[in-house]
Length: 259
Ligand SMILES: [Zn+2]
Image 1: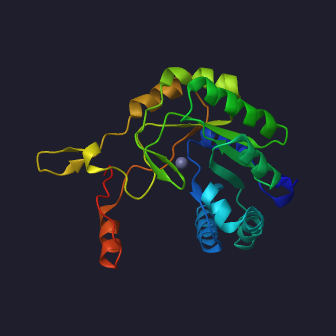
Image 2: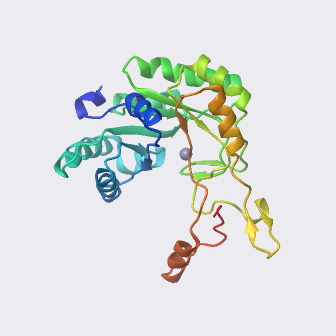
Image 3: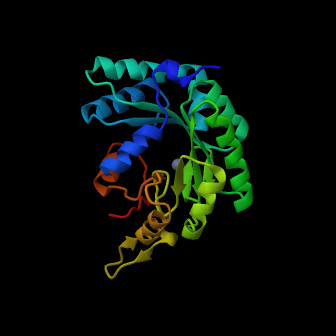
């Protein structure tokens, strides 16, 4: 068992509390290798921003849990060397079982996500609570999810997104004891945010994706004021960047985002 505190990592509790107070967001970036980690730390040190370094199941298979742990430990030292020690969280992204979350905690993760959003509501609560009960023994924080995001992330893919039901959030947070909650308001995973058939066309014939549901976000904030909310994926696909990718040999079609 490796304790994340011995690696110089932190959980999300304090950084989220400070972010709520200060009115800013904390970025979470997935990494699979040293070069990505380097770029993430350089950018966050430059901005003096705390950061969530997150690992998907695929990254864990690709890079090995042991190497990822030493890279995260190295990231702490690296930020110090760059002149500003930022709080760094090592987080499991979209964990799909208790066993996986437990294993990550044993390998030195300071935070885990248990994504039971595809399960029936009561089963999502039971699984999330099981992870919370285990994780909190080691002061590891837990992110849960309500509502399904569209798109592909690693091995987890969802054909259709279902917006989070605002009326469920208080009950879910209370019954599970989670430290943060991922919700679905229309952001999406992956490079190709929306398929043409999910969009409508405007008067000029340009495809327009479904709008982000900020009304749901506002309603959730009213029901659980001050509770850390997580938004996965993103909404926009900058068309100039799509053009650059295609110009240099990439093949990226139908990359539709909210401008
Ligand atoms: Zn995600």
